[in-house]
Image (tube, rainbow, N blue to C red; front, side, top):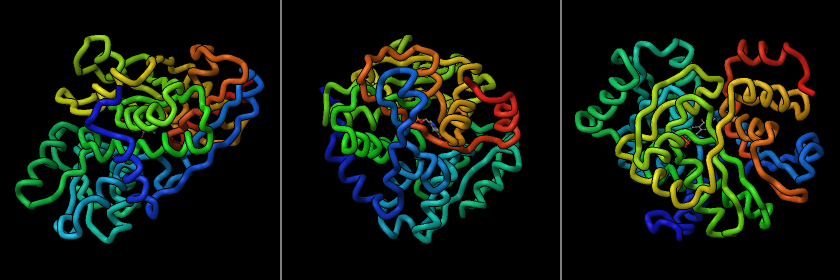
Length: 328
Ligand SMILES: *Cc1c(COP(=O)(O)O)cnc(C)c1O
């Protein structure tokens, strides 16, 4: 049933590899969502990781798996978002150098963000695509190792450690709600969770517009999607047209993918803040949005884990949302 490219053992090994670099994150009970649904609802708080997102798990696994010589030669990546921050942080922890290729159109605060976490940004090209090509050229020219945000099995296994932790804490977990973009996260979690407890339903959540994995599943192959402005900016982007892992794993193991609107994401951010005193970015709140909007089919007494993936939200955006007042 599980695609044989990635197995539970690989995820268990990843967990040992990253143990000293990342946290085992808490499962925080949400009283308000539990009361509303009659289920037991718990937040898996990846917001507590260094760099404030789960991305340190995948980067940690890939980078720790390189030989000291490879790390010494330098590494390169091209994400301006949470992946770039996490890769920069992990490299710095291991006393090595992460070059992050960023296009000229990226705002200065993104460049500064990489520096804050110990990365070395190079601003190049007029689009994210050009920055990516430049990053790949540095692999040949300078002998750097590429830390690929999508097509690396090590990333999937690192992210999958979240599934191990959830099933360790709640062996009879009924539903896991997971934000989906490129799908490395949900494919790792689904592989771990379904290997341990095949009864656990793994449900993906994306924003309504520009949901690359959702559209790809519908088309039966990886497709490109236009980019729309969204509160869930960490969920934007494609799944890569030559997707090697996540597309097949999601097709086989993920029970369904639900979509949530911008209004529902905003309400979820506000809900987590006022009811649970937790700051979430849009992508980190889509699981809550799906549950609050009644899109998740659940029974009373179900145990539901919501993966709250990150809290790197622009503070002006966050304040605008919460200034609207408490969500009932
Ligand atoms: C990267 C990211 C996701 C999506 O992970 P994928 O593996 O690309 O599906 C979700 N939430 C946050 C906060 C992220 O940074």
